[in-house]
Image 1 (cartoon, rainbow, N blue to C red):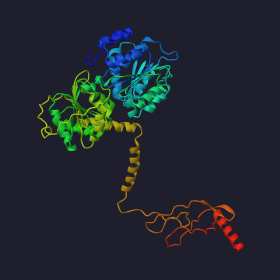
Image 2: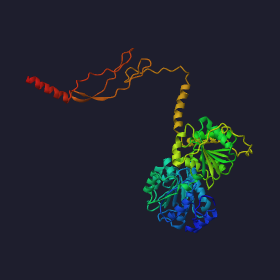
Image 3: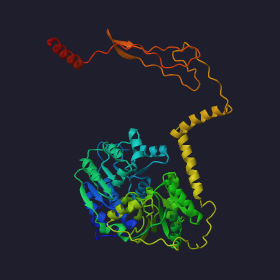
Image 4: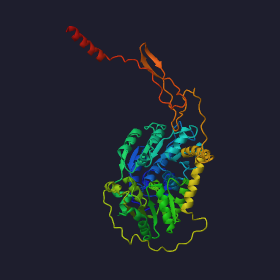
Length: 538
């Protein structure tokens, strides 16, 4: 089906379930990629796998084939209820979970297995109903799934005989490790289930997770020569901060018609860069945490269909998205993490094609460059920023989109803010809303009185235990705390009396009672005794 790096191993030689093999052939999958050829013989035998492979190497198909073959070939556990899942696939991001589900539907939609896609940002009740009706395979992000697991009547993992962890290193980066352990502890023991783990890097922390929750996993590593990044032409510029946007526009105008992704480090710059590109006449989509999930899916679909020329994104879109035909990737901001750099440029040069990755090492993010070059074990070729490149070439006139098809960046973010406000209102308002409400009420009360006119506070009676000060601008003293003092008869509780200042005088500190003479210390008494002995001897 693809010109992805393939081996001589064919799926037909792997003794797969006949229905699964027919689905693969119908979808055009005949030969294995290196990670598939390494993983499937081990996984199909029922053994655990810890695999290292970059995105774009075919690992998604590898673990999907292994999971589906197991469910079609083996009976479910005896203690399983009809609605309980038999396999669980966990992904760190919504986009990756959606992509895994889409890949599964290419060849497994007619195999009689029920799939459930569970992730945040969409209708909670609809997903709960989907789980309650039963699913053989759940594809989920950890956070949303835990919500349903804690509601024991929604889903139970006690009969889950297969667990797959995709992008395990990213799970750590996003802080999901506690969630992973929570879910793994609610599955059958590691000797009674099969676990497959895949990661871009098998770091110490990933291997620690593997050995803690897996049953003697076999470590499989795809050599660096076979990863997608080897076919990416990398280029580096050193612009000043104010030159980044003109340089981006200049370079884009010299690759007219290319499907392009632009990566930035913050959500604020997604909107800023997207607005500038839209103003320059480009059809632009955005992917960031500020954009609602449904809108992100719509924009991503339009980009895949070629209706949008450029997609501006944060690292939320850097992993797991299978977008065909992306020829150019721009790192408008160099990422802080070297692994994120590899995953960003991995959006191009997919399916065996070539691509261009262009990075801007500006004053703010150039500090990441040494770590990136050390990680990829090569120096990125650099080119000078010339005045010619800072000048965008004239663009040909584009056909105006049909009414209702083109949505401006301003409208997208306006809708996102309105949706966030609605969600906050449903949850009873966020922390800022509650604090703002109290402050707003106080401001409203203050605005009812003219500035400079204040009602005098009523004077407290002189017999009050803690009277207000009569001196202007001086606050009343705090109430004295009761404390224990040593007295001649032992420990007695003494309270400082609250005295009342004479009328017309400013109240000072309350008068303190006379302190009893302190009892001399043991050392003092000992020295005095020695002195008395010497004096009596003389």
